[in-house]
Length: 282
Image 1: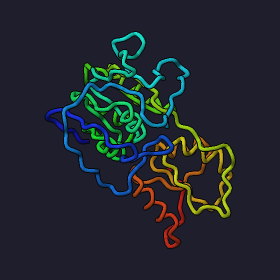
Image 2: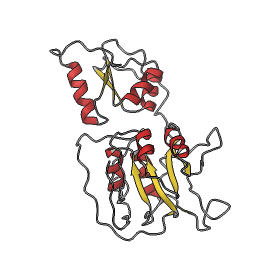
Image 3: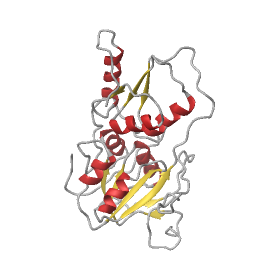
Image 4: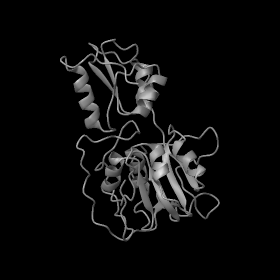
C-alpha cells in the first residue's frame, strides 16, 4: 500500500492516447513492472467535467437497479446534474476510486484538471500507472490488487467518494464502502462491449488463451468455444479464474500475482514440456 502526503495537486492530463488504455474496458496490466515517473505537480483547477473533444469511445448505459448514476456525471449543486456551462463540477469529493485504466481515461477526457484536494485510490499498479500518466497524484494502492482490498484499505472519511466504473463492475467496492458508512457516488462512466458476434475461427488451435477479466472470459465462452482440449486457459488472478469457471471455461493456470509478466511466466511454465503435467488450480 502506498500513500503520498503534502500538498494536493494534479496536472492536466497529457494528449489523448499517451497513457495506458484497455480496449476491453478493463484494467490493462503492464509487463514492465515499473511505474511511470510522476509528472510535476501544478495547482489544481475546478474539476469541472466537460464534454470530450474527440469521439465518445466509452458510453454509459442505464443501470437496471436505479441506484447508480448513468449519465457520466457526478453530484453537483444543481437539480439537472450540470453547472450550467455544459459540464459537471466534481469538486467536493474527498476521494475518487478507480479500478481500471479505462476509468482513468474516461475521467481524464472529461475533466481538464482534478481538484487539488481530491485524493485518488487505484486498485493496482497498472491502474496507478495510467493515473500518473494522466498527471494525477495517486494516494493509495492496496497491497492486493482487488476491489475488496481497495475498499477495505481506503481510510475512514466523512467526505463523499466518487467511483466512476464500468457497467459490468461487480458491486464489491460500493457495497464494502457503504457497509463502512462511507458515502459513495456510484457512476456508470463507460460500457464494456464486445467486438462482434461472429464465432472466432482459427486455422489451428492456440496453445494458450489469456484471460485478463471476467468480461473477456465471457466473450471467449461466447465466441471461441468449444476450445481445443490442448489449449491452456490462463487467468490473471483468482477472481478472473472464478468468473471464467462461471462462464464454463476450463482453468488450467492462474498467475501468482495480478500482472501481465506473472501471467506470461505461468503460461511459459505450463507449456514447458519438461515441467510436470499441469493440474487445474483450486
